[in-house]
Length: 193
Image (cartoon, rainbow, N blue to C red; front, top):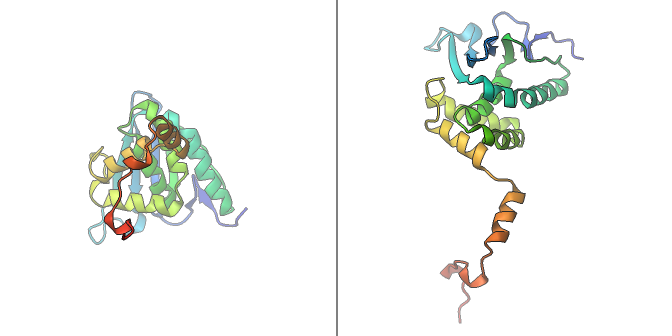
C-alpha cells in the first residue's frame, strides 16, 4: 500500500483537490447525482466551483454500480492506493477516475435498461486514455446534467450501447453472407488488361 493518503476512490488528502462527488440518495426515487468539484482552481479564470455532470436514475445506477466499483478499485490497486465501496450519501472520486465514470454514466443515462450490459462491456474494453478523451469531447459543450442525449453525449450512448461484439458481428454476417460478386470494387484495384 502506498504512503499516500486518500479518501473515497483515490481522492488525495490535499486542501480542496479537484475531484468528483457521486451522491447516492437513500430515497430510491431520487437520481444519483454526479458533480465535478474544481477544488482550489474553482471560481478563478471563469471556471465555476462545481458542475453537475449527470443525474442518473437509480435503477440504471444499480445495474452499473458493482462493475464500476470493481474497475475503479482495480485502478486504485495498480497505484497501490486504498479501495472504496459505494455507500448512500456522498462518495468522492479522484478527478481522472471521475471522468471515466462520467463516460459510462453518459452512455447509460438515456439508454434502455436492456442495453446497459452492452455499455458496461464496451466501457470496460476502453483504455483510460480513451475514456478521458471521450469525456473531454462531451464535456466541452454538452457536459452538464441538462445535456442528456445531445451531441457527443448521444454519440457515446450509441457507441457504447449499440456497438456489437466481434462474435455478434460474425453471427450477423453469417446470416447474410455476401457473394464475391456482390462486393463493391474500386477501379483503383482492378488490374489493367
